[in-house]
Length: 409
Ligand SMILES: C[S@@+](CC[C@H](N)C(=O)[O-])C[C@H]1O[C@@H](n2cnc3c(N)ncnc32)[C@H](O)[C@@H]1O
Image (cartoon, rainbow, N blue to C red; front, side, top):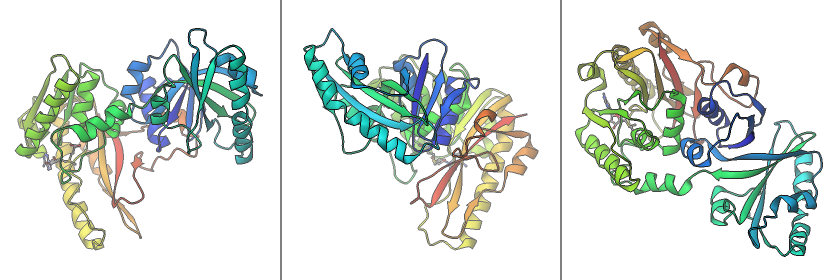
């Protein structure tokens, strides 16, 4: 079956996550900065896949490949004998990155102009139809969900416009925005000081680790447990969180117990350890951990007016901490164990400063893994840094994040 995946605002991270989640052997028939299309053996379950992905906004099945679309074709897809009132909406994405803006605009307008004719064709067969539109060009996840477009009585039709062809697809699931926001803002222990990471990013990092649910997964800087929460929800059975701060750990426990209760999770297995990462091998058996997924301490909060000397001092302190951590990770990880980690990039007007420790980490015994399969390297809009990391940032942030994957051995 052919599926489409509408990518989040960082297409590099989204496609790296998708290939990790669907299997590295997945070949995209098409990839643009907005959408990936792939043939998947078997059926993808909307209830299972979507809650796992942090970087995909919608996914659905491709129904038809056409060069021209008519109102009759669309009405035919929409008619469903079991309902007498239906809701439908359209979204448009570019199938190929280099499609001309003029063609995209022309096709969009042509299809939108068909809406009234579609309604009247459906009316002829006694189906009342409502066309759902929004101010934005494309329907957001919220609009799709709230207007019943994912139910029996609705459909979001997605038009993937290429240079010559158009794929017509139907959305099966959208990002679980209500749940994500409930977990982000609803959990009992939060603090601006610790700087919570978004649950979506936690999901993506877990996907990038590509380890089974029965493996031992450690977050050695667990903070208020964002990564552990997402892993717990997903069914990881052997989770370990550690943090140097006992109060933060108490918050992590509170959040995990809140999650267990609210999501009615069955008996779950996690342990929380109070530990300085630089001594974590004293708390865990040698070579017992399969994967580490973590957002470490990223340095003190910045004002934006720090001198280059001050930034260099922070970089030196963090470099020492991270190198000590990697020496410990070598002791506790199994051979070929994975680390998915965020490093800070200090973004200033004149220059971006990243941690100059990759060569040292390699000397400890780690290899840097490329987050993207080689067959995706040809797409110029996917951005991997020369040190094989993916940058995750917003323009207004002083500290950007860089996602790196390491393997032991
Ligand atoms: C950026 S926060 C992690 C936030 C976490 N990802 C979340 O969303 O809740 C970093 C955490 O590292 C902890 N930390 C700082 N230095 C540490 C060390 N040497 N060993 C272990 N934990 C440390 C801090 O207490 C803090 O909770």
